[in-house]
Length: 158
Ligand SMILES: [Zn+2]
Image 1 (tube, rainbow, N blue to C red):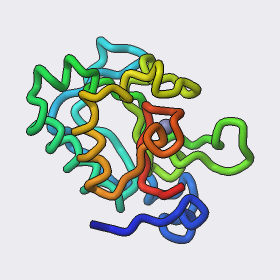
Image 2 (image 1 turned 60 degrees about the horizontal axis):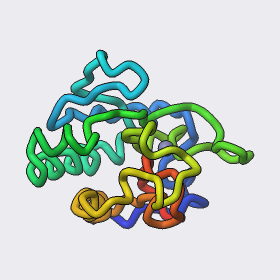
Image 3 (image 1 turned 45 degrees about the vertical axis):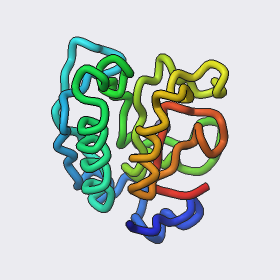
């Protein structure tokens, strides 16, 4: 398992935000996903940083193996909320981890940014296995680490 950098160290490890590397990885999804803001739109792949393509791909393979296609759909683990996005961190002057292509959002509608574990869907016990899979690849859940932004996981420590 790769020892991913801290947020302060992402620039030296992954390069500049918005660089060619930040979209050079193509995740071939183990199962089709719906776009959160237009659920009629189905994707089978998405772009990310070259260095995190393999672990992200494995996360969704393992998720499918654990929950099955029906489980994945029932839990909303097939609702894609974005990966690469060239934007600053909300309410901060630094770049979002999404600007490096190293963060993934799922089911944003049910895991809103400021919601804690009392409201966020992904805080429920049935998602424990999913988070174990994510953490098994060395990625970090902001929900589990900080109790907000439960839609989000990233390949950087906080
Ligand atoms: Zn995010």
